[in-house]
Length: 183
Image (spheres, helix red, strand yellow):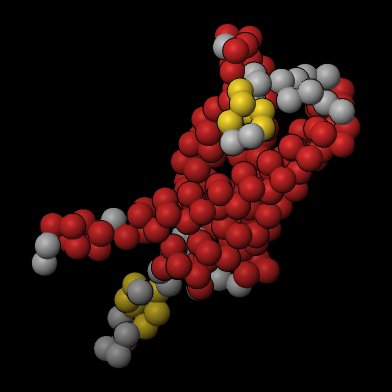
């Protein structure tokens, strides 16, 4: 077997988690920016603004809507393709635990993105409104979102692996010779 094939087989779960983590992140970002960018225009919030009451309300709405979309996408992809033990449990029991773990990392995402955007905007004000692809973008906001994504993906892996899709403890049951065995 080739080294790459052996590596992929050995690290299948982590590689699939990273793949679906990136896809989940892209789904989340698409939803987040689909709410944030038109919302800024609709509410008359300048592109470079990362503070103020209207921005905070819009930002919070974008984060929550993004979170819901990402959690649903991640739950079903992780359950089906990433964690081998995912199909052992009942989805209606797994989903609340999964969502609970993701709720904790929503807090991380929210704080890292919000304070990161504000900090980066103070450090690099020239990146607050950069013309790209025919429109202005706040690269500090995008940079903070990237940093938050890394923190969230790593944290979510541990929640999923050790709380949601963990192996069930082996049960003792009698074997054919009358002794108890562990499965």
